[in-house]
Image (tube, rainbow, N blue to C red; front, side, top):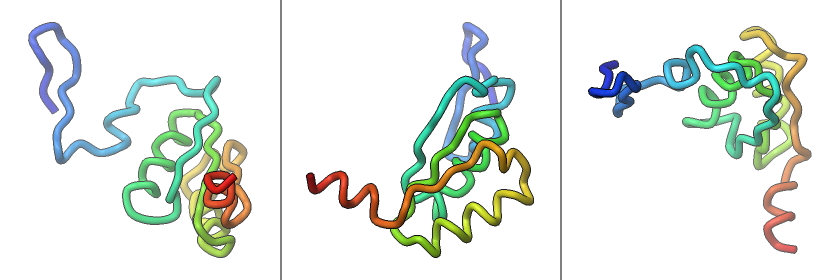
Length: 95
C-alpha cells in the first residue's frame, strides 16, 4: 500500500479490509454490515469487529447469520457481535 503526497494511505483493488481499519479505534461505533455472512461482507465485518466496533450482522437467513456469528468467535471480539433476525433488513425495506 502506498501513500499520497500528503502522507495519507492510498487504497487499491488489492487492499484488504484489515488494512483499511489498521490503526483505527472503532470501539465507540456500532455498524451494520449487510450480507455479513458471505462475499465481501464477511471479511469486512471481521475487520470492523477486530478494530473494536460493535458489528450487527444483517443476513438474509437465520442459519447464515448464526453460522457467520459462530465463525467470528474464533477470530475474537465475539462480545461485540450481534445478529439481526433473518429477513429483518428485507422486511424493513418494504415498510
